[in-house]
Image 1 (cartoon, helix red, strand yellow):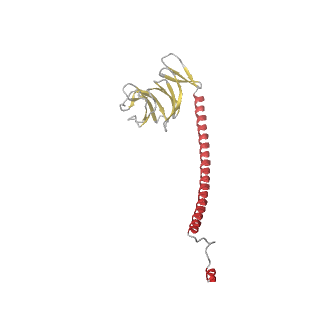
Image 2: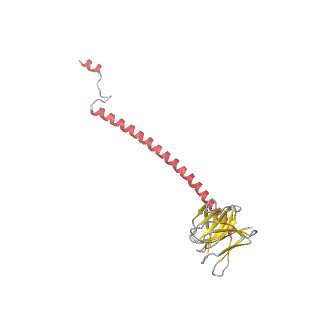
Image 3: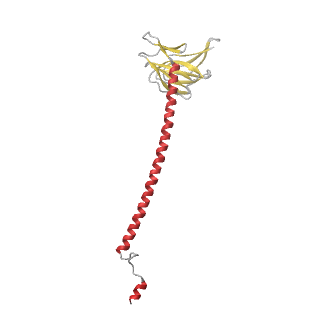
Amino acid sequence: NDIYSTGGDCCLTCFDFRQRKIKGKSEQQEDELSSVIAIRNGQKIATGCQNGVVLFFNGATLSDCEDRFTGHPESIEYIHKVGDESCVTGCADGGLRLCSFYPHSIHGLLGKQKFGVERIAECNDLLVSCSHDTILRFWDLEAYISYLEDKESKEDDDGSENSDNSDDSDNEEENSSSEESGSAASDGDDEMKEKSSSRLEIAGKSPEKRPRAQDFFKDL
C-alpha cells in the first residue's frame, strides 16, 4: 500500500494509497535523489543520487539517511533490484554495475552503452536497458554472475598455491642458511686452530720441538 518517490526537492517521500496521503518524508539531502528501491523486506530504503552516492534510510521513520555507499562515477539514474540485498545500477555514464548491500560493494561492470541508462527491466532471464538512442539492449546477468564466481574461485586457488610456494621457499632458505652457518663455524674452528699453532711455532714452543726436563739434566 506504500510507494516511495524521489524528486527534485532532494527528499524521499512515502505515500499511503489507502488513506491517500503522505505517510512520511525525509529531511532534505545535499543532492537530488534520482532512484529508489526497498530492501530487507522494506526495512531499508536505498536511493541513488546525482553525485553517484547511494543513501540508505530507515523504512519506518524516513528521517535522515543512516548510511552511504560511494563508488559510482556519475549520477545513479536507475536502480533495479535483483535480490533482497543486491541490485544493478544504471548510471549517467552508460554503465550497468552489479552491486550488493551490507556490506556495500560494486562487483563489476555488467556492460556499458553510449548514453546514460534511463530504465532497467527484466525479460525472462535477461535484463533490458534503454537510453536516448532508442535501442533496447539485453544483458545476461546469470552468465555474468557465474563469470564472477569462477574468477573469484580461481583467484582463491592461485592464492593458496602462492602461499604453498612461499612456504617451500622459506624452508629452503632456512636449510641453506643453516648449512652456511655450519660451514662458517667449521671454517672458524679451523682458522682458530691454524692461528694457535702458528703462534706456538713462532714462539718456538711447538709441542713436538719443546725439550723435556729429563733430557736436559741427563746432558749435565
